[in-house]
Amino acid sequence: MNKILWLLFLIPFLTDATAKTYFSNVSDKPFSTQFFGDTLYLSVSDTARFCFAAGDSLEISAFAEPATQPIIWSPTTGLSISNNGRTVLASPSISTLYTASISTPSGVFSKSVFVISDKLPANFEVSPATKTVCPGDTVRLQTAGFAAADFPEIKFFWSGAGILGEKTNGFALVSPTETTEFSVKITNGSCVLADADDAKIEVISLSIACDPDTNRIEPGDPLILTAVLSPSSLNATNFDFEWFEAGKKVGDGLAFSVETSRNFEDSITLKYRLTGIDQNGCKVSSQKDVILVNPIVKFPNAFTPNGDQNNDTFGMLTLRGNTTLLSLQIFNRWGEIVFESTDPKARWDGQNLNGFDLPSDTYIFLVSWQRKDGALQPIEKGGITLLR
Image 1 (cartoon, rainbow, N blue to C red):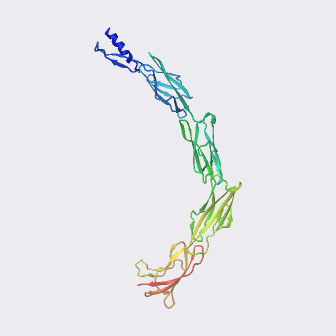
Image 2 (spheres, one colour; image 1 turned 120 degrees about the vertical axis):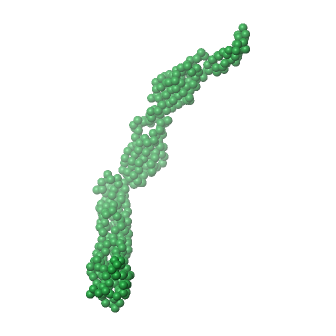
Image 3 (cartoon, rainbow, N blue to C red; image 1 turned 90 degrees about the vertical axis):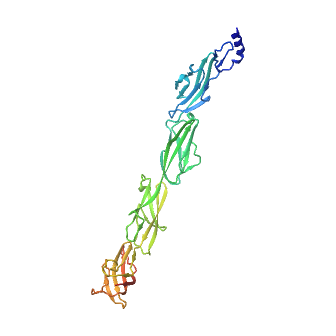
């Protein structure tokens, strides 16, 4: 009778949905009464999404008591269920409303989640994939391979130098100054494809090649300048080429031979400009500087013909370029010739024309020489001191 009274006393407090343990004053043995709550919890909100296109899945955790009571999911298509329905991997091919239910003595409690299955276009592409254009041209790159109505949330993000205007449309207007690859990233809900596709816009360019491969030569050296088109797939016969030096037209055609035999002091820079026009009126140009450098010769001011193999002879020293000695003459202080030679390798050893050693003194030399191209150079004159 006392236990019944105690139970009647406790009934108002047993409305909590949590299991509690109570002790009776009549008996020191506890008794447990389990009451089920009216809520089923899921680890996701009412709407969740995942990227089906990437092969992903959505993990859902369910919480309900008692743990031994299974949670039933419906439908089960696209679900991998474990842990008595408390762990679910959802990967439906289409967006699906799933419902989790648990039966308790208090009734059946349910919770639903709408899983959105995001996708990406299977045949997405950018058109044109490649295109060759004239500098300054504008190209429209267009996304294709899908129906926009099937992907209402799709977004685009273009990258590459030379994009005009917006970079988030389904197309991009581009005008690159050089050959450039453009790429587009697309997103659709939870799906992200960093490099969905790309396009290569090849800008026609013109350069000048030198043969030999140098732009620094001396008079008399051969030098051929040749037009080089890019991309290499272009046919040079479709272009008309004109060569200019210092603004004056000097030639036509694919190649031009530079006249390097010129008179100047030390060095001179020749400025060449090449233009090319194709059958569609696309005009490209290029420039090349060619530096002509004169040879440099030097003459010592003293020598010691003592047979020690160090500074024993006097002659012309070529510091730069190619030269040819034509004549070497040595005079004493009275203007008498004491040595002369037309040997290109001639050097004076301090002896006179008869082979006798001359005394220490200052002598005068006259040297005639020419460049590689045969151009005579000013006669070199100076003093040379013979030391014994």
